[in-house]
Length: 173
Ligand SMILES: [Zn+2]
Image 1: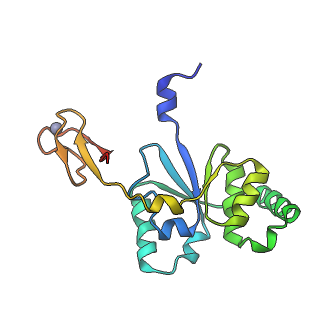
Image 2: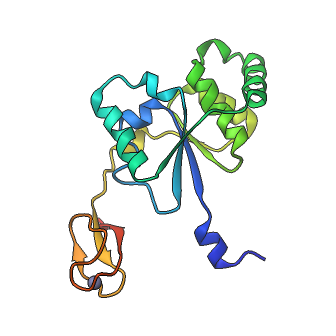
């Protein structure tokens, strides 16, 4: 039996490509406490602007991102499948690594607007989402003290009134 607690503490892995980082996907509006972003190690090389590089730095500072290399078995498997589906020529090395990570981390969700990536996900039965539509729905958030319920419009590690921890909430529209 799965208890509520176990469910609540379960980490959700989202595998994202550089486009997601460039659009600051999930950083501002989507990422919840138990959510973690997985990116291929190679991704850093693909980020050209200082803005997107700083997004990565912020995510790292907040322990919200894991940079990792997929296993070579998974890369091999993905390459084979992409050859079967005919997507191989449309996939960059990073795309291949994004897809390979989805095999290394089962139950993860791939976020990519790339058709070839989505196509291979379909073939693999890996959950995928396009993030394009999400960018249009920027949400505002606020922080609330977990004890005295004071509200703050900016991030505070501890409540200035009672010293307790704060939690982030989204403003409902
Ligand atoms: Zn407080």
